Amino acid sequence: MALSQEDPLTEFVALLKAEGRRGVLGLDCGQGTDGLRFVQSGIHFTGVDPSEENIHAARARGLEASVAAAPALPFADSVFPSVWAVDALAGLPPEDWDGVVQELGRVAAPGAPIAVVLPEARQPEQGAGFTVLRSPA
Image 1: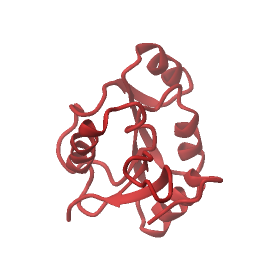
Image 2: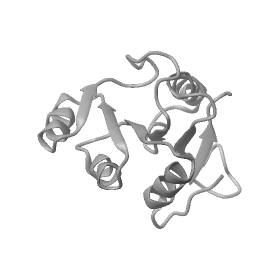
Image 3: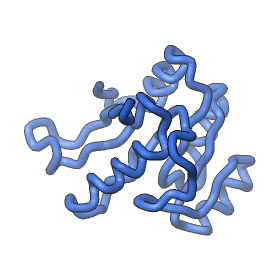
């Protein structure tokens, strides 16, 4: 499933609500801008980012956030009803993409939606785009 370039977060929230999903893991959450939008939409947000500075800023905004990064997330298997990882593959070499996607699938509940941006090398005919993958059922 593809999300629009205009406002993919709003579309993803609508998908989560339609499926009755009430929580999301935000990978590479930055200072929590997207996290706040999820919370304002009634979706519980747990954010991770490799930058301590970003995590301090996200926590200052009242978000649950911790320092971590794929491909080794500090969570049990199948704990998140959904994953927002639109920046997860950006800047990574293509050989690392599959490992990150596998790790996201590991922490996501069976069949959970995982929003990512597939870099151009993965979709040369379309360019980069917002895509919703599903964790293994």
